[in-house]
Image (cartoon, rainbow, N blue to C red; front, side, top):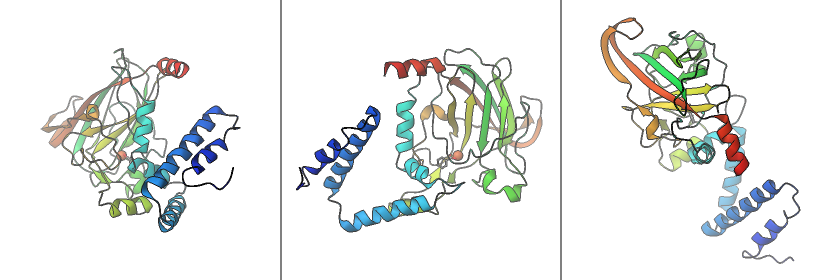
Length: 297
Ligand code: BEZ
Ligand code: FE
C-alpha cells in the first residue's frame, strides 16, 4: 500500500520490520516507531522544530569525545538513565539501591590500604568514611573491591583539575576486611553542576532548570558471585536533594554526614578542628538472583 496518511503511516512502517529475525530488535523498533509517531502527532511537530531537533542531536554527537559523553548526559537529564536503572535493578530487601554511574569514573584508581587518606591535593573539611559490605541477607563480605570517588569542596572532580592537583585525589579503591569493613579519610564533597557548556546545558537554560547535583560520594562495589553495585551516598544537609539535575536521589541513599568537633576519630587520628563522619552499610545482590530473574522474564 502507498498514499500513506498521518493515520496510516505508522502501521506501514511497523510492518516493514516484520521480517526482522531478532524478535527483540523487532519489538524495540516497532515500539520506537509507534511512540515516535504518536509523539509527532501529539505535538503536531512543525518542520522548523523537526530541523531544530536534528541539528540539536547532531550538536550533541559533536560534543562527544574520548572524555565527554553528551548523549548520556542528555539521557541523565531526561530521566531515561534512572528509568533504565530502575527497571533493571529491582533490588531484593537488604540490597542497597542503585543510581547513575556518572561521567567521572574515568580512571582505574589505585588500591590503597583501608584507613588511607585519599584527599591528595584537595583541601577542605576532613571526612572519615566507614562502611561495611554485606550480602543482601546480612552476611559480611570480605575481599570485596570498593571504588570511591567524589568532588572537592568547590564541586570539582580530580580529573577536571589534574594539573592543579598533580594527580588523582578523592578517588581510590579498597578491599573489605574479614568483617566486610573498609574505611578511609578524605574531605567533605559539595554540590556541583553537571557539565552544562554543551547542548544539555542549552536545554537546561531554555527550560529554566538548574544543573546541580547534591553533595555525594560515589561507590562501586564488586564481589565475586554478586552483582556489581553502582551507587552514591548523598549528604542529608546538602541543597538540591529534591531537585537533582539527573533524578538520581533515593531516600535510602541519603545519610547523615555527622558534624564532629575536634577530638579523637574512631581510627585513633586526633583531629584539631571540625570534621565529618559517614557510616554506611552496603548490601549487594547475589548474581544468581539476577540470572533467575532473566530466565523467568
Ligand atoms: C556524577 O554524579 O558524577 C554525575 C552523574 C550524572 C551526570 C553528571 C555527573
Ligand atoms: Fe558525582
